[in-house]
Length: 118
Picture (spheres, rainbow, N blue to C red):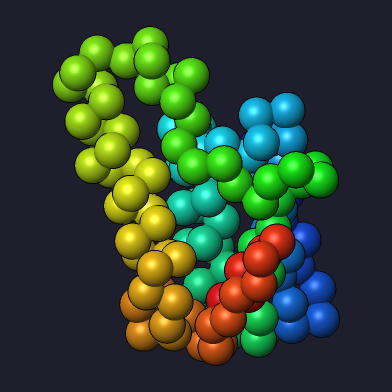
């Protein structure tokens, strides 16, 4: 699958998922969250993978958090939907649980300051 805001490289039993929004400090907007979810679904089906490394482009930040500039243009209903189905839901499923069972992935989890190994 082609992505605009992330890059997914898979080879030799490892996947490297890079968030590619360095000008926005890799802030998570709705499009990026959708791509992240699609990429995580893609790698979760690949039984050959043993590690997933999530990292961010640029030198300043791994991920700044939710894209506040995008949220500023949302109505209250849109913001609630974004928070309910976007950033916080994705983060809860993928990063804060950090276990094989929570994401149905066949590998161990770990993290570092610049990237997360799942």
